[in-house]
Image (cartoon, rainbow over all chains, first blue to last red; front, side, top):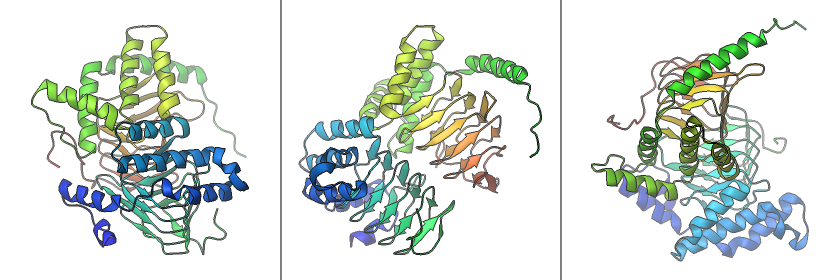
Length: 197
Length: 219
C-alpha cells in the first residue's frame, strides 16, 4: 500500500505530508546498526569490530541515531547530528529518506533527499546524488543490494530493482530492472552488473 | 598532433581584469540579495514565500537558516561579498574558509551571483570572472568556472537550473530559463529556454522549456 502511495506524485502539500507520514514507519533507526557495521566492514575489508572507527560507519551511525531521536521527538539533537554529519563527512540524508539496514557509505560525500526509499545492503560511493527532479517531491525507490558507483546520480520518481548496479558517473533518470548494471549519461543497461564498476 | 594556436595570455588577463572591474559594479546590494535569496529558497522548498509584513519576511529568513541545510553558506557568501566591497580585512577570508569547511561551497571573489540563488545541497564550485543571473538553482557537485589558461567564466542568464554533476566552463553565454542536465559538460553557448545535455553538452531541446517557478509568476 505504501508503494502505491509513493509511486505517484502528491497533488497537494497535504498529500505530500501524508506520504511522508506513511514512509516514516519504514525509517530504520539504531536497531539496524549491527547490519550497518557488517556492511561497513565488508565494504572496507575490515574484520571484527575494526570498522567501528571507520568514517564510513560513523556517518551512518550518526544518521541512524538521528532517525531514532526524530522518532522519539527529541528536539535540537537530530538537527545537530545532521549538521555534524554534513560538516564532518559531507553526508546529507534528508529527513524524508528511509534507508533499511546494511547501508555502507565507505567514502562519505553523499546527498540523498526527497521522499526516497533505499532497501537493504546498499553500497553508495562518494559524490553521489540520489534525489529529486525539479519541482517533484518524490525521489527514487531503490531495491535491496544495490551498488551505486562514485559520481553517479539517480533522480526523479523512478524504481531501481533489487541487485542493480549503477556504474561510476552514470546519470540515471529511468527505471532500472532487477540485477541489471547501468552506465553512461543518460544511463543505459550494460549486462548484469558484474563487469560494471 | 596538431599544435594549438598561440594564446595571448596578457590580453586574456587584461580582459579578465576589465570584466572583473565591470562585474564589481553589478554586485547586488546585501539587503536586496538576502531578501530575494530567502524568497527563492522558500519558493523552491514548496513553502510560502510572499509576506505582507517585514516581520514575516524576517521570520522566514531566520527559519531558513535553521531548516534549510544550505542557506547559511549563501548568507555567509553575501556577507563576505559586502565586507570585501567595504574593504574590511580578514573577515571575508574567514567567512570564505567557513563556507568551504562546513558546506563545501566555494564561490570565487570575482563571481557575481544574482539576487535569489538556490543551493539545495552545497558542494558547489563557482570560479573565475563569472556572472550568474537572478533565480539560479545550483545542484550539488556543480562546477561553474573557466577553462585552462583563461580567467573568464560563463555569463549565465536568469532562472537557470544547473543539475547535479554538471560543469559549465569557459567564456560562454548561457541563456535565461535554460536547463543544464545532470552530468553535462557545457563548453559552448546555450540559447534561452533550452535544455543542454551530454558530454560535451548539446542542445537537446531548444526553446520549448517551461519557465519554472519564479516568485511573483504564477506557476
